[in-house]
Length: 473
Image 1 (cartoon, one colour):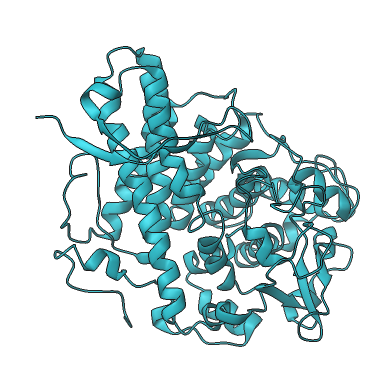
Image 2 (cartoon, rainbow, N blue to C red):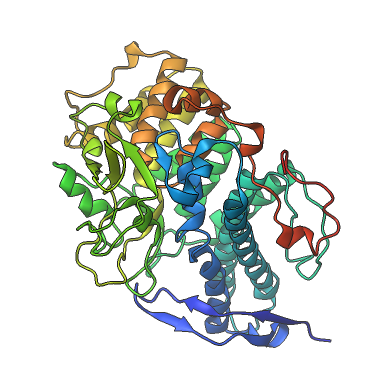
């Protein structure tokens, strides 16, 4: 008897940033539908839809992550509570429930395709490997965010995709699945893609490096990030002024030399997170923003950043809130219409890879290495407007650092470089020093229940195998 699954194919087929295929939700017989490359491509594209949606990378999920950054001063309105490190209130519990639901929808759609692709009758083995690599990459990406935010979660795979009641798997079991998926994706994905927005084997290696980084398996993180570096596929986008960062983060830029894996948006399906960084009546996005994620000119992280660092100029004063309020203009779109912005979300870019390698190689070698220092210096030179591949007056010197001081330097540089990209909270958590950074930079204490989000009632109401929740909920 054929299994019938209901799956919404509100699908971005990535033919360009503006080609959007939307189909009505429909019943699909898995055994008969996924037989051609076009059919499988449509099914794989359905994995992207929830990840690109409002509750994951488009807006609210990333906003929750940024609110917990020690580099952000505070949130505003209902977004204030996550920035206080006391756990979550009702409004934000609802937000993270929505994120959970969409991440698991991506997992569900990936599981369907992972189960169906091997049985396709009209697809070459090479195409099967490519599609399978893409589906496993996206499943690993979804689980990577689930396990870091919720800890032990149900492990739904192609083998139990139709089961409702599943107990929480251990964190180690979830990570084992993630690593297995990414190792498979490494071998199945191509080195380059003709359609921007799809993962390559280098994107799989970068995500795998980040997984190892998070697990404090620094030798493996250094190895994988260095494979991306040594591939020769990527280079930093050079800048001379702060305005030149528009060539890296701007709305009209597509597929720069720094892009490892970006989540693509366009004018009809914009990257809404940018609205959280901008204010009302600002010229940077051609529409009113929400000014929910803010900093302040008196905040120690901003005060201590060198005025010659061009990244500091990406903060701008805003008079519509408290005195000294700063908003982030890292991502701007001055030319779009009322549904702006059109920018892509830079999930993984080359600067992130270089900084990851710098820290991981130091951790693995029990001290800074020449190659790691060179990787760090490339990013630092660019931040000051110097050519990234040439020695400069702002270079750090190897003899000035030991293991601890170099790691602290890497953490500082990663904070400046990736602000607004949903990285910092995960960085300070993985080091085990989140409480220290938050205390020093925000003057706040983290309650234990803030480290993990609650398992939502949308799960526990139908999954009777879950009998506990995360601490404090």
